[in-house]
Image (tube, rainbow, N blue to C red):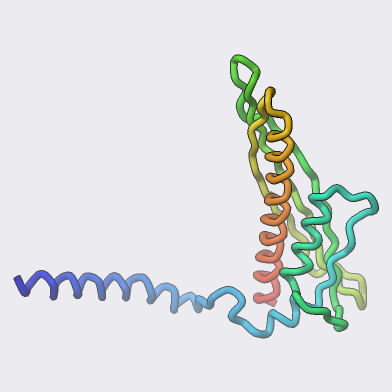
Length: 172
């Protein structure tokens, strides 16, 4: 009886060592642990959306601006330019033609420009997707689903852009 708990403890300790040694070997640090990156994130100004921009572009810009730096900063070094391409694709169409499922995709192309010399220091793109059902007899719920998906895709896209920028700045 006493052999089992000791053996289980040894296996548990062995597994912990197997998991943590590779993490320590690759110099793993938690995201946002590096305090040098936070001021760099705050020095990025998000370019404004175009006049009469769709709601999802406004949501994307506001979310990205807030998660980059939640306080006002006058020490702006970089400008983040962005562009969203929105696409739809029909995923499922029923035989009766009453129910359909659509996928909405945002392709966000962005670049960071140095304000002093107007050089692009980083450029990349991300894809954010979502899906919704379109019911022929429930127009109101379909519109609400579509708007909700657009809202969440824009929020997710902003967070993906932040992750890419953070990785770039942490390597810099």
